[in-house]
Structure formats: structure tokens, C-alpha cells
Image 1 (tube, rainbow, N blue to C red):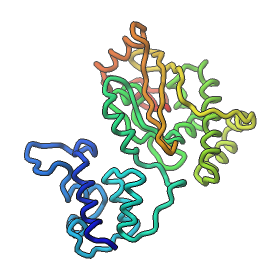
Image 2: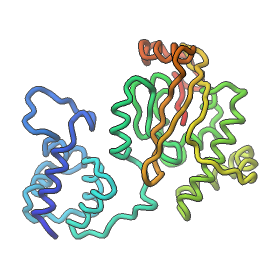
Image 3: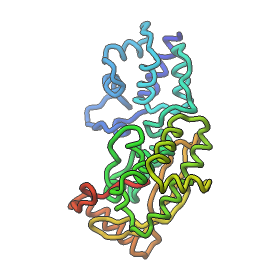
Image 4: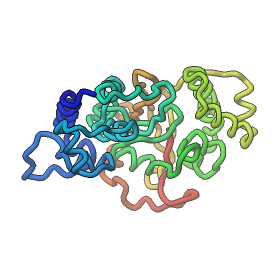
Amino acid sequence: MNHSELAAFLKSRRDRVRPADVGLPTGPRRRVPGLRREEVAQLAGLSADYYTELERGRGAQPSAQVLAALARALRLDGDERDHLFLLADRPLPPAAHAPSTHAQPALLGLLDRLDTTPARIITDLHQTLAQNALAEALLGPPLVGRGPAASFVFRWFTDPAVRALHPVEDHPHHSRVFAADLRAVAARRGDDPEVGRLVATLRRRSPEFAALWETGDVALRRTDHKRVVHPALGVIELDCHRVSSEDGRQRLMWFTAPPGTEGAAQLELLSVIGTQDLTVTRGRSGPLPTS
């Protein structure tokens, strides 16, 4: 194990992450360009003393679990994470089937720059990882839960309440698109047990999904036209755009409307009202997430 190289790498990555990137206040008295050591420790669920020992290269032997936690806290991309594991003489974590529980830094960087339009980052299984304030105002907070319960595509076929986000006449279109997209994801991921369980559960619980799955239709979602039912502004017609991460497991999606249209005017109004007074109940309070 190369203690000195590991220490230098951790410090260089810590200096790169800004407090605002991880939801911490900046403050006027900050003396370091990035995060403090104790902040990294807190984000990774470690003691400050233990992390300090790592950065000082004093012989600590981090486990694979500790390294994975540090990779998440420091927002390392795949290559940086692998380098961290190699420096610590640990086997590289599996990449193909690794769970997408944290938004990738490249997509987060783009999301940070989209402050005038609703935008969010989702996994290829439609689990929300991050979103900006306008996305929450338009679509509501992310779904709560673990596993399939956190997936909008799963809830679309098993929980009628979430469909209230779109006009009833649009539901068949969204169902077809969701099923075709999921088939494309299943093919791309290969023999992935997470996708296999999701598909098997949906085929068992939703006759609609089972019928759509049998058609064999396949198409990754890239752009789409959506009508969103907003509790304060009514039906908003928007164009939904997407870009995917290099490995295809995460997507940045954002909503726009052509200039001069009613949708554009509604988006401007949305930026003013934000999440205030959104109390219309549609199976639960406020607007519901989409993907």
C-alpha cells in the first residue's frame, strides 16, 4: 500500500470539492479551498481522527467499504475511484453492476449550470439522484423508498396516484415509452439482477406492463414532449431533453418550452412561485415526480 500517494490523492480530491457541491455552507472564515478534513469524515461516516491519519499517510489500512464511502464523499468518478482502490491495495469494485446511488460529477456540473429551467439527474431505472429548485417546483420531491419503490417507472405501473402528474389521455403513451426504454436498459446492462428483479416484479404485478413487454418494443428515451399537470398552473406543455453519462447508467433531463408559447410563460411564473402554495392533493400533497 502506497501511504504517501494515497494521502496526497485524498488531499488533492478534498481540495477540489467545494462546500456548496455537497450542500455545506461556504462561510466567510473558511481557510481551505475545498472541504475541511472533518467535513470529508462526516460525509463518509468516519471519525475525523481516522480520516486525518489517512491524509497524513500514517499507516491506516482502509477497507473497501471505507474507500467506497470516501469515493462518494469526494465525488470521485469511475477512474478516480479505481485509482483510490489501487493506491490502497484493494480489489477494484465491480463497475458494470455497481448501484447508481450518487449522481456522477460530470452530470452534477451540468445540473449546477441549469438554474433557469427545471432539471434533474435520474438513473436509467428512473430513480431521482439530484434536482434543482425549479424541478422540485414542477415535479415535486423525489419518491421516497429503496429498491423498486424509488423507481418512477415501477411506481407508474403499480401506483395509480403517480399518474396524476400527466393528463389521463397521455397515460398510454408514457406506458409504452417506459416499457420500451426499460427493455433497452435491460439489454444494455446484460445479466443484471437489479433489472431482472424489476422486470419480473412488473410483469407479475402489472398486466399493462406485461402486455407491453411482450410486444418487444425497444427505444431509449432521449427527447420527448410532455404535458405536466401542475396544481397551481394547470397543464404545462414542455419539451423534455436528456443526455446520458458515459456508461449510460445516469441521465440529466431538463424541460424547456419554445419562446413565446404558453409553456414558456408558465415556466417563468413557476420560477416566481417556486414550491409555495402547492397543496392540491393528488394521492398525496403537492406535485409528483416524473422521469
